[in-house]
Length: 470
Image (tube, rainbow, N blue to C red):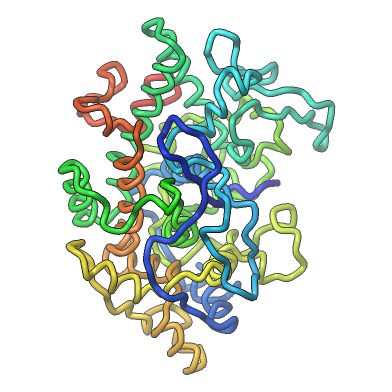
């Protein structure tokens, strides 16, 4: 079964309307931080500092679990790296790595190349295909004749096959197909205009709903105020070719905070019990139709008091993520079945700077950021590490671990800390401000009154209600 929580690569483009092969890049002009194998293992191995187990416990956050999967959906929309090497012995040049997605938040994972170049996704009138013989409340599928156990495989007709990796992302993809179709039905507009409006609403949700929930409030407010004053990003910029790059500090470290949100199990609807993270029902059974009994009732992933809250943003990842099953990672080395270890190794391979260096560089600007004491002595298992390993981690903390630990120290896991938040806001606000066709480029644009909820702030839940999926 494909990994239900994997986060992938990167992309670019001159404007939102232009789909071109992009590249990764760097946000900061800082030297790579080399961290030894022993230090990375101490952090990311099963039984290491990032493993939630025994008395090393995390807890639920106030972030609805829907945003765990929305974060993955966004990741698939803006990044796809198929070429970087996990265990490269040399630092890889980020600018040489192709990003097979656009970073422009243009829903290319939904639209692909549009009705003319990707006609198999559309019905001939500009509407996206939805439903199949097994479940009308699922994405459209084509029967392949192959079998997965006793289930016939039905390949999803969607713009990015990664969005059929797990039940909840697949159902979110379905919801965005419905959103496009309802906008199409309400107004007899041309495909291009409907696509544009769908993108604008999606971008607005990312900026004003998702990021507001997960980011440090002071950093979020600072970045939003700069954005609406039309001030340029402080670090993010076009590359030497004039394209919008995807910084590896974002894709390989900061945005992987979503792994910390992941629970061990989720409840999809009223009738079903919770489903374990690597239960075959959580995946799509080898890319088969979502059974009707598992159709997601999204209210269960939003409402308080349910079993579906996201976990806190901290350095502890749920046990399942440190023991990825064989179908997810085909590697005999147990270490490589640990997702946090894989993240840390990839960060070293791509030459990420230390968390301390990044914090100092951001703090030199007007961002409300400072380099903090991570209070590592209170991390479960810290005192049992060899002194040399403790010193190495303390002095050159890997950026991925720094961001998660900072979130715990500053906000007790309720939000990302200032450094992680600044990286997210730089990239997302930078892309939207520099992109020639984001909702910010159309002065006075606001979400449709038909879609917006009663509090007049568009949220992901509003879109799901609008299409009858909440």
